[in-house]
Amino acid sequence: MIKDQLFMFAQQINVKPLPQVSATDGQLNKAIAVTAQVTGAIALLIIIVAGLRYVTSQGNPQATAKAKNAIIYAGVGLAISLLAFSIVTFVVKGTT
Image (cartoon, rainbow, N blue to C red; front, side):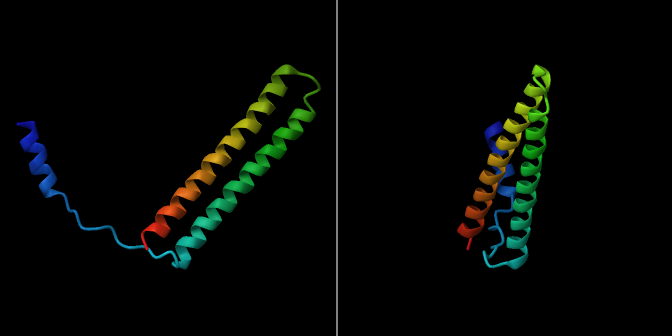
C-alpha cells in the first residue's frame, strides 16, 4: 500500500534535468569569490581580536579560555567555509 503510494508520488515528480550553469558565468564566479573573500576577512578579524584579548587577558583563566575558544571557532568556521567553497567550485565545474 505505502509502496504503491510512493511509486505514484514518484511518477508525479518533474524529473527534467537541472539547468546547466557554465563555469565561465561571470556573475556566479564573482559572487562565489566575493563570498569567500568576505568569509576569510571576517575569520581573520575574529582571530585578530581574539588574539588581542588573549594577550590582554592578564592571566585571567576565563578570559584566556574565551579567547582560545574564539580562535578555535574562527579556524573551524574558516575550514568549513573553504570546504564549502571547494565543493561549490567542484560542482559548478562538473556541470559544464
